[in-house]
Image (tube, rainbow over all chains, first blue to last red; front, side, top):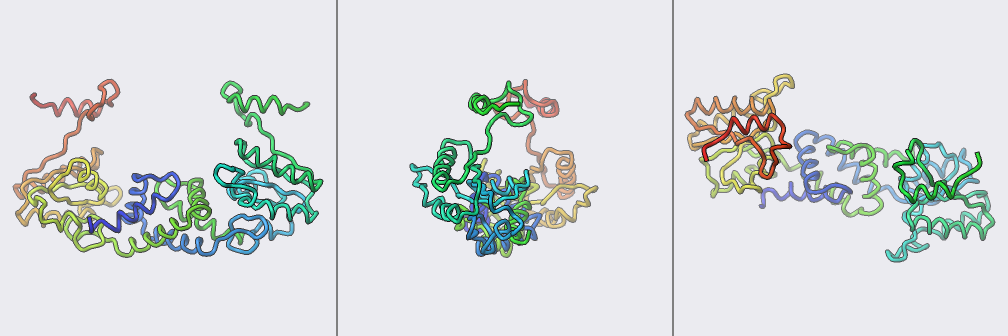
Length: 198
Length: 198
């Protein structure tokens, strides 16, 4: 087995990627070695550099290689609006999809006492400091609609209440273009409870 | 966009992997940066090392970091049997699945004149030299069942014929456990044409 050692090690290393099992990992290793060595070299180099340089933004906790991320460093952004999300990917999609012009705060997770994730792990201290600073007029809670995500939203809403800051939750209901027939009952019940005058 | 540069570059680099689009690439980048930096560092290091050290076996053309691969260096293998496959992955699966004890020759592709892949690209010269050496009694053609794979098998069978070496093709037919009802007509027609006495 000695001769195949390095190739097997490479395949195993690809398995650390999310959604990649042994078969896909093998395909990736063969693809790079046989057909795209240049791409492989670039991946290896950029990955090493990214792991070295990318850390958390001092203000919003997103991933960035500079002290402040692009959004936090941008003076054009509305500092009165703060959107709280669970992950950097969530803030990206909000920025791209709706052109939100406020700022973000990234929790890197949700309250989950069983997994040992409490307010400390989510940076609630840093969030409270920002609320205390006084510039924020509305905090938009865009955590996921899971039980933990809802609990996290309520927890932060209470903190906002203490500082007399308006806390809002993004709307949950029927997705645009969704047909009632195929909507799950939990979403349908949210849609009815959240109904508004037209 | 300056601050997000390195992260975007990393996501783009993951897109060079087969079957990985922008969404999966983003998930991979975030996963490694947020949850598995150690795995990411290992992937980067092993990938660089593999690209540096892994080349083609001098005898069978599979991928290996040594001059001769494990199979070619193994004196216990039956040198009289030579199995010709399109890719290193094919020889791996044959070795694992049926414990084939002969040797291999890897074409790294199939004849495809339109894509500029001729006998030179497939190492047919090297293959012919091995046939000429005289130790081989049977050549098993295990190229894929595509039109190009079949053409490649026929092309190599002719060369084997010139050297008076028996050339065989692996059987195509109904897969074990496959139900006739759901088998495509091309496979069914192969199964009928390839019928044998019981």
